[in-house]
Length: 156
Image (cartoon, rainbow, N blue to C red; front, side):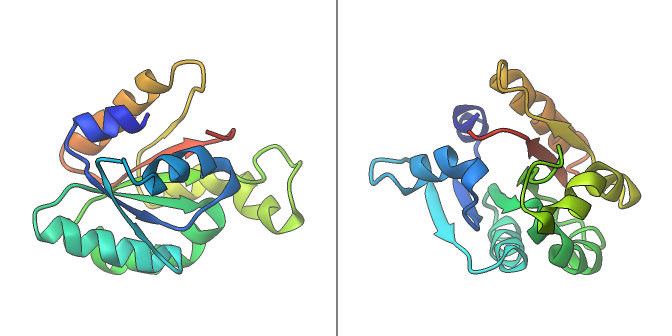
């Protein structure tokens, strides 16, 4: 999945680590990684950093846990979606199966409906065909330069 993003020009990544995305973060934190990784203290801060990079001409990617999407909605709805500063966002889907910590139950159950309410297209990562999922996600993002979400159910 990283290669699909990087080869399409996404060379800046920011976000808050999550156990479901730990493999992705390992790649980004490797000193030999060709991409730039900017750690963020919160997911809404990551959106701010990525938005600044996008306005400056970079092609950033935001990484976040679905629980962080909740408090990021204000940034998305009052800045990104209004001013057409669209970003590709990779979101871990904690609690989607009811077998996670209780604080993930509600957002896990409602994640896709929440994205639908805000008109944000989403794709669920197929771990058996990650490149195909990444391509479908980037196609959603690139078509009309729309904020799009790639949902990761299982660890990568």
